[in-house]
Image 1: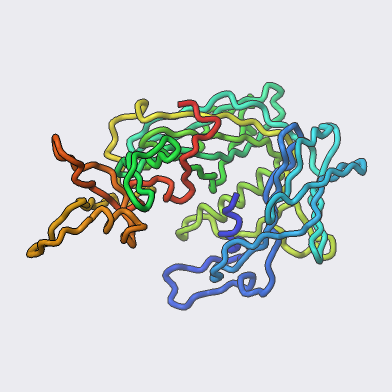
Image 2: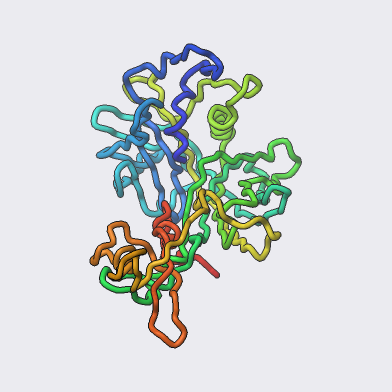
Length: 403
């Protein structure tokens, strides 16, 4: 839910028109103060509760994150029960499984260095299981869908978020590595051809069965992927989490979606004030961004392989490798520059960083002399052969990966 930071504009009551020559800064943007942002759900079951606290920043600021540290955070019940959360990282507060009594209501209490905040007491709404995750191939790629139903027909409103993981390969595969002095074969732990990259959703996905005779959600779109996306070039996995919402929570998320994702033209929804359920104890008029719900979540994981998909265009360029134009360099152990009788060791010059290579390349293909010694290597820039250099990528296989 990192999108909160990017959309402080929702406090404004009018949008800046792109075509205007004179920029308009709404009064809320011009204020010197910043507002508390609360992200997370109180998990009523055995799963951990994670709450993220931060302060808004102006769009013109270079810093995009402003965590709230040192706060005292707890979950409070309507019968004076209290469950403290511990700050696990800057701005992140966590508690192990709370196993709350579903017959009571609960709220979040936040005490910062100079203020107290409380959410409204809300009932426990446990999400029914996700019936299925599926995907359908479309002209431009594929769409992932979720399905669920509530046998009791009491849950009418839902929200989903998701985490995607996919395998990325660099443009070149290298079985060689330099230790600074010489080129060696890579060990299995030094693999840099297969990496996993994970990303968390930043869109709001909602669904409702309120207008249906039965509480059934079928083929609700969760996300779409283009056929040229690196995510579906090899192997892809998505874990979807499902939350049950009250009507008030559904209204909050619907308005937030309109204000953050559906702006862009005069025909789209215009910015409006969004009222959450978190309030300042000292100043009820102070805006606080966020909505706290209570309940257990449901989750399910879907795997998709390239073999299940059509023969779409080659994966390069893509969002992981946007250029796709890596050029290789020949590096010989013995090379005579034109007009010189003194040989140059290009492997040292281009690859071995302890022996002269200032911007060392990665060797990927041996240049062999049948019946004779190795002549050298073809080499490329590290970004072209080392997947671990991509943002968020790791060559350690996730525990849940099934391939």
